Length: 131
Image (cartoon, rainbow, N blue to C red; front, side, top):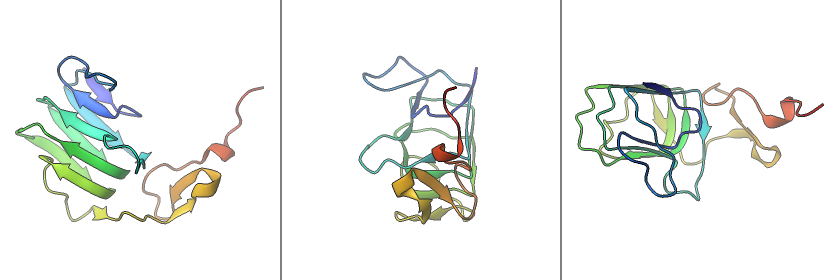
C-alpha cells in the first residue's frame, strides 16, 4: 500500500501507537504541506519500518524525526524548510533549509503560506465552506 500523507503525522509499519495515527506503507510521500506545530512534539515521525520509498518535497515542517534504525535505502528529500530534523532521518540535503521562524504571509489570519511557494499554496479564508 502506498500512503500519500496529507495530515498523517506518524507513520508506522506495526500496530497503532496510543493516541497517534498510523498506517502500513510500502512508500510514503509528503509533498507541499505545512505542518507547523511548535507545541506538539510529534508532528511528523517515521517509526518501525521498513518504509520502501520515502519522499519529502517542498514542505514546511516544524519537526520531523525517526527512531527507526533503517536503513532508509530509498529516501529522497528536497526543497523543504524545517525547524527540527532529528533522530535517525538521513541528513537534510542542501536543497532544503533550516529555519524556526519562517516568514508566513499572515499567521494571525490563518495564512501559513510562504512567498517562496514552499508548503501549502492556499489559505482557509480563500475557500468557501458550506452553502
